[in-house]
Image (tube, rainbow, N blue to C red):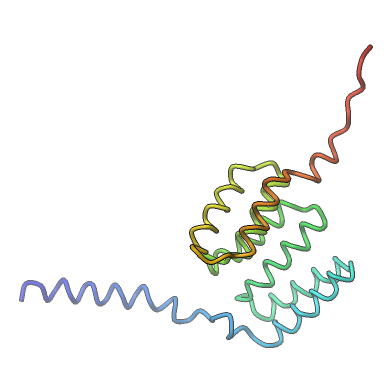
Length: 165
């Protein structure tokens, strides 16, 4: 009898915590129109039409804001435009939807490398290694290579100082 109130409390707590999750869409339940716009945007990005790709991805998110793949793709476009802060913001939004999204973690880590935040990128790499476990995730190799390479864009922008004789 004494444990009945505790069990009821635990039951109500479980229901309260589960209800927001129940309203979330799984990846395979993203609205088809959003997925189609995302696919078209990828084609535009490959063709080098980055602004049009970004516009199409934003439209995909307007159609279905739960499309975390579109957030990751916007981050990839932002990286190509050397907008690394924006890439980090977009991947953060994807990670709010799914904290263990390997693509979002890897792309975010790459943007961090470009900004010189190597320690934070290494933390992302560790998270990827934990998520992937024994299976080989391509995102681990992708982020490891970026960390080993270091910031490429930032290094290219640093002007050389003239040597004095």
